[in-house]
Image 1 (tube, one colour):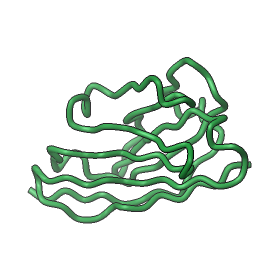
Image 2: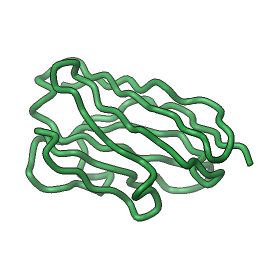
Image 3: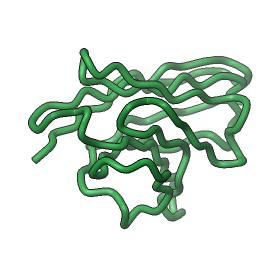
Image 4: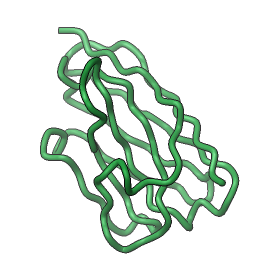
Amino acid sequence: QVHLVESGGGLVQAGGSLRLSCAASGRAFSGYNMGWFRQAPEKEREFVATITWSGGSTYYADSVKGRFTISRDNVKNTVYLQMGGLKPEDTAVYYCAAAYRSNSHYTGVDEYDYWGQGTQVTVSS
């Protein structure tokens, strides 16, 4: 079992930045690939970014590529999502998720085994 807790969400103006954190507890953090997803009102949960268990490889949704950066600290058991150039369409609840370790990139909701409770990000125009 892995317990995930997101933090760092809030209200920011368009063009601004935020850094989300996701702290993990339970089983060895380095044994999991980590992902960030988001869900806007009345929309399905969508993939944002993922990072492999070692941190050696990352993959992004086209909508955030070049603006967001995912990283992890396997000593602090934390994964981060640095968000820049925020747009109103980035407004959503952001979730982190964990999947058993792989050298592949997981982008599907069903591929992840554990989820956090989410943190709200609101971008005003």
